[in-house]
Image (cartoon, rainbow, N blue to C red):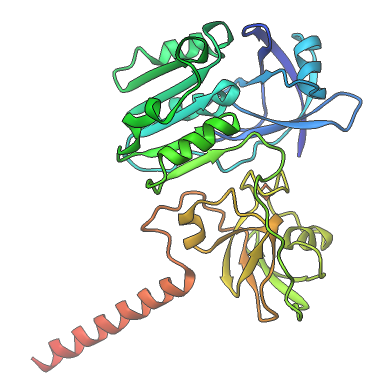
Length: 353
Ligand code: FES
């Protein structure tokens, strides 16, 4: 759903970035984004939200040749009205008590800033590694400085102009921490961070790219099911499956509206749990290993893997899977059955004694 929001304040950050605020009729989770449509055009782009409560605050950095980022930087002023989508995205804070390590580069600070605020509000220790080209190009400097007054906030600023490009050495102090990790920034910083944290199992990444970075060609099964079952809004619907279409496209064709945003496999908005059967995904980049082990799939990237029955649950879009909660439905049923058997055996033993 799109909204028309009035811009209330525009602030310049260095030569090539602005932030601005708008009052919004919706709430959002720290780390989510909205999509903005350029006036009188069909150009739209996603921008992360950097505030955790109203007003909605976004930062937009100029992208060379970028149609919307340059227009916003050149023309946006207080009082303008922008078309803005409802918030979406799964780059949100997983619950828990572990410290949170945030690694941000450039405008990647926008969702990271809101995650830092949310984590600190929950009483968690936060470590932020924030890389910018130079002090002049640092975005949200005052807001980051404000967080630094808290004893639970630990900041490592990195300026390429002073320290050179970040290396694994700069991230070494985080590599063995028992923590949840959130990464957002340019591709090279993400690649570097993922290498430095490769043995960590709770690493969540937000990418700037408009499409998933890695996709695979998936071969459709020779016999696809005629329909699949989709749980949505508390009801199970039977959706016709059309070969060559993704589960999301089939659901949309059938007039249904499961949650989605990028439709390119990187935002995670269309996550759903596979209850029965199996799917093939072109890309699963928005999913963590635990999401996959928990039976989650991206509807916008999925097709049926076999011609057997397929049931997916778009209501079960919990982005909060932890390692222990990540049971597949089959495993959960097994655990329940085991518990019933143990209780029955226990009762029988008590009666015999
Ligand atoms: S809609 Fe973004 S990953 Fe599917």
